[in-house]
Image (cartoon, rainbow, N blue to C red; front, top):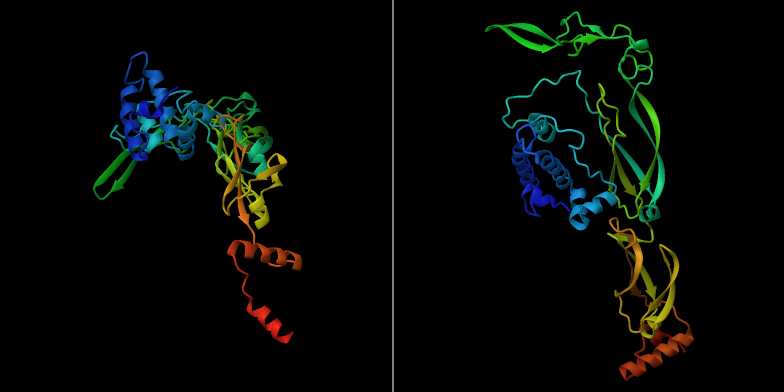
Length: 374
């Protein structure tokens, strides 16, 4: 299995700035445009995977605990950002860091080149037990799909685009601006064809010449057992369709779990509280409680103290990386002193006091007043 920290050459407690710096250095070394060795492509893909995981707090936490298998079981895509291509080195830095690393300024992107579709985000809410045991859930999303009427060309009935008369098909025009220092000339994107070099004279009526249109789509999503509040899942290519034949973006699902009124969750363990009487604490007892798997008997050992715990192994939340392994249900014991007792109970408690203290209990003020009036 790959060690993402070793791939980037950083320590396991490296900061995000250190990870960014390491990625920049290694990307320059292993990008296939720069390094022509046979292993460069595989090395560069590994760099992208490592960077993507270690820069995401949740992915990094899952990886630190469970490794690559944990990422897969948690629903994260582990192919990395370069699974379908690399782009040139400058595009990589612009995409990851916003540019500005001394590679000579941004290149003009070819508007006719394939462009990846946008990623989308969908927030869903789960009940506590749904998050614990997982489920298959149908979701609905509105996303852009390639127009079926024009196959994404934007033209009606298969009509072909015509050369833009404004730029003559170059996609750029020369623009001259007069200033106090003289005339300033620069090359800009053609405003008529938006840099494509061609225009659609007869646009598709279904997508209005865009080549894509908004469609509602239903998707069945398998939520793995053990997801927690804030967990994220990525569905590859379920985002907006690309342009000019580009791949679709991804759909990110963010999970929100409703809190339980009975359970408190900490990782794969759940906690509940159980109040017992002093007699139960002294003598021990068997009590029926509610668990995630239904009612279950819990043995309270004799002599248990207030705040101690009774643990039920395997009754907690499934582990994301190993669903067959479950955490514990931890029952915190509280000893509740009775406020109102019967005369019979009072006599027994008085006798117990005499045995333990070696003397009779002192009368309360209330009992003394009663004695005066008697």
